[in-house]
Length: 413
Image (tube, one colour):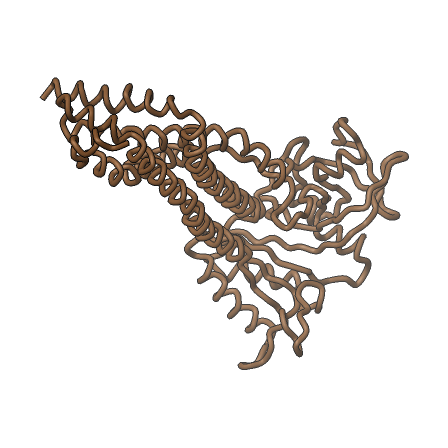
């Protein structure tokens, strides 16, 4: 048994490699099909994982079990109004949600708009948000410098702001703005903090191009006297599982507070923004499976190429096979030699495919603007799959070679 194993290993390894080396160009071209198939599978998996990772990162920055109450119905008389469409949300609504919906653990008032900020001889047009202190936890904002404003600032309608990273860079360069005074319109605000950068959202919006201030200050100073309503109320449910029940509870409470009759159109809207991203993540994973299946066709085509080449090799080496059998080679040894050649071709293509995926992944990543890396598990599966393709593709040619009649083979010209 040990002798047979050593003979088999020599035939499978050394003899197979020498046979392939005698036809370098043919072997290289045959391995090319497997190389492209393996690289395609790895690239598809890498792109799918990168897309899913981006959506999951966006979901992480979106908010903590976010429930978004938006002023205005999504559809009034066939026209979508959404935020700013009506003046239906008031601070008392936010207080009612805090008080009467136990599935909601944080509530943040929100008003927003745009304005030009000025510091020295620099100015920058940006979005501003007037929010409560809970907003930073609901939306998972962190500080890079300074501090958030406090509930006392909100109650006293203080002129304090927290800058996003883009605004800080445009107005202050590399310097710390904490403690500096910035003008917004005719009002002067003191910078108390700088937000940690979040980067670009999935929709392409710069999340750091923003400034935040107490919502009471925004209402009275930027919106003007008599502005007593909110654009949005952002809430955080106690858990992910509690989000849907919390949405139902908020709907019921708001309809009751706004005296909306059964069957009448809502003057508000409650949304779950994470549903869109969760659907995007699921769609990305489904698409990844589909594309992997399509990319695997390249491996199948490469396997067919190997089978054709091996059948041609059997036909060309008929005399050699007959001579081997005549001097005592067993059919299983002939079978193993040709099977080994097919597997070696596949493995060669598999390893070249991994190298191509690594070098080409950076190029594809630059085109997409993503960071692509070769998933180790994808590389391993692709190489194993290429070896399996080699085994399947080489079985029939090896079987034909092993069944040749030695006398007829030696007579073959």
